[in-house]
Amino acid sequence: MAVRLDGRQLATALEERLKTTIAAGLEQAGRPPGLAVLRVGDDPASGVYVAHKEKACARVGITSQGAHLASGTPAAEVAAVIARLNADPSVDGILLQLPLPKGLEEGPLLGLIDPEKDADGLHTLNLGRLAKGENGPRSCTPAGVMALLREAGIPLAGARAVVVGRSLLVGQPMALMLQAADATVSIAHSRTRDLAELTRQADVLVVAAGRPLLIGAEHVKPGAVVVDVGIHRLPPDPAAGPGARGRLCGDVRYGEVEPFAAAITPVPGGVGPMTVTMLLVNTVVAWGRRHGLDNPLADLVP
Ligand code: NAP
Figure 1: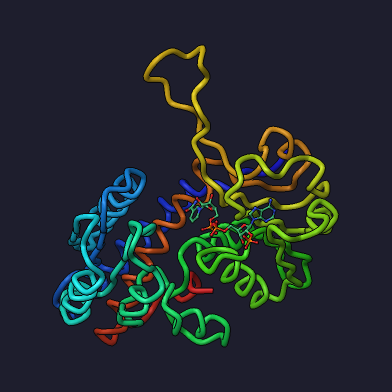
Figure 2: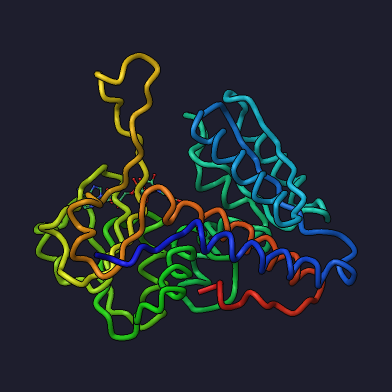
């Protein structure tokens, strides 16, 4: 039976560290850290994610302010809100909730966020800083995965790591972070020829393909550590009647892999809660930097 890499438990512990860090710096800073969450349109999943993030801010003592624009808002108007938040001295972190509605391009708008306030770590400058090993806000999901692996004492130096997925949001920064921790990293994607042959070589397998239940027993070496980034809601069982909701699952067939893996993240309760926590970490670190405070959270910035 695999060790369960419990993201909820670690996120709760890290929230305590964040509270302590904020309390220690509050007097010198003269104000709490601030996160602005900018949402455009009415994607229902985004509404749930934004609510989670705002609640998490409230739990640790970060002031959050939301801006919600209608789905037809022109790019210039979104840009104007970003410019206002860049200039707002009470805002340390800005999050542009993705996906954006049709007609708005992510890249150019993310590029307008002040890189020092880039709470999601997705600005080109910050991806470049990660590649160069320089300090800066880190992409939240892969940073959360690194914190889970570190907490569980998973050795990475010299380990063979395979990342399934090459998105700028998850796969690519994940591979860079594992490489910076001295793992030997391969990246698989939709054109990879024999996925199972590659993933079976992994001591550490991180799956971020966005394909429900893609990875099963045939893809995993006994004793491997498996991190499942995917999150999906399956269609409800027709027998469950009207109004029933399908269960959540990841990219990994948990029941097949768990009996012989060394460690595995559950879905839900694995990577998801850590992503939210890393957003808070990026915001508190930015707040501390603006006010010349020591950074006791450096171990969380891979
Ligand atoms: P994405 O932008 O759609 O990227 C998916 C990647 O997987 C692409 O590189 C794609 O290859 C690759 N891929 C797709 N099918 C594949 C296959 N059959 N075999 C191998 N590779 C395959 O997705 P994303 O934004 O990285 O997110 C991935 C998943 O993580 C989604 O389920 C998302 O909901 C979830 N997610 C969860 C969290 C969290 O906090 N838990 C955060 C972010 C994302 P190509 O490049 O060749 O197309």
